[in-house]
Image (cartoon, rainbow, N blue to C red; front, top):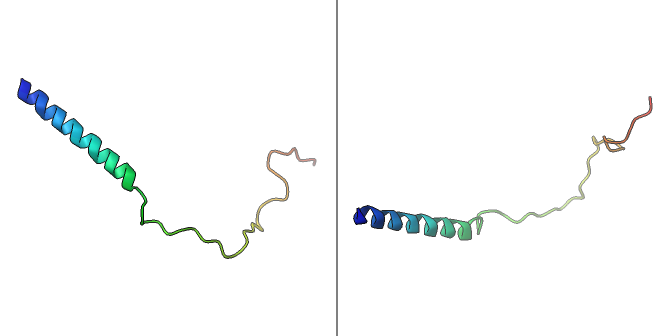
Length: 56
């Protein structure tokens, strides 16, 4: 029974260390930096917000 407990602890420590390692390495060197060269426009957007009451 002690063997099962030892194996369970080893698996738990391995899983926690793998999770921490993955969180620390996440996104480093994989995503290019965002560069905006043109000003942002949205010509198809409405002139007033949707939550404003409209008068018909």
